[in-house]
Length: 239
Image 1 (cartoon, rainbow, N blue to C red):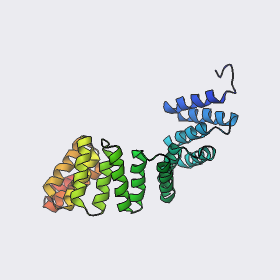
Image 2: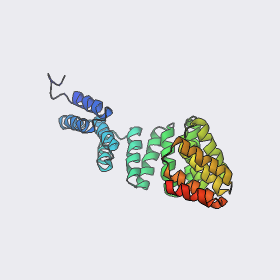
Image 3: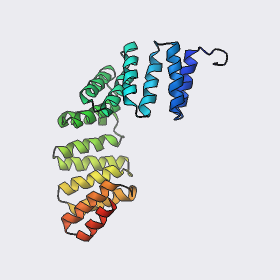
Image 4: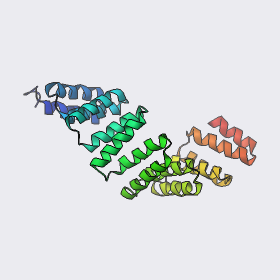
């Protein structure tokens, strides 16, 4: 199309999206920017330009493009959601929370938005609100291992260790190779002074991820608390 009609904004946009999906981000950005130059009031192009920036970790540019997309099409929940993600990466948690809430007002059945709202609230220390979000996310996506994992982290931060253990186990049931869940399950056991159980969890995390420095450090702590100094030293050296 572009060989015949080089001013075809849709074609430039679609070419840019294809390049970005192939991880050819710079080409993708340039093509989408060409589409926007031809048609500045093109919300999908601004949105996809933002996602291309976001995938590269260029969050300032992503936020600007998401905002432009919303100025043109303010009722698109996915744009509010992804703007929230970019703002959360920037540490702008109040703004991220507002974006997730707006996304959910527009589309109340999106588990990912509840999960990420919970993450933002948890980062602010608003743990009871985070728990409510994770509970709703689990209702919508009961098969998704990340949500009970995040809920477990919130329960552990609240000192509700038995609930945290149950959530980490639920996450592992859904994703048996979930090294982070084994590591945090070990932490919850260690908080309960169940050191043998903690050690078994850390070892399983390390079987799944042999480069998991945090798990080595946590395993060393558990050995130290159990009085196994030599084992502890060996773990710390690996961390």
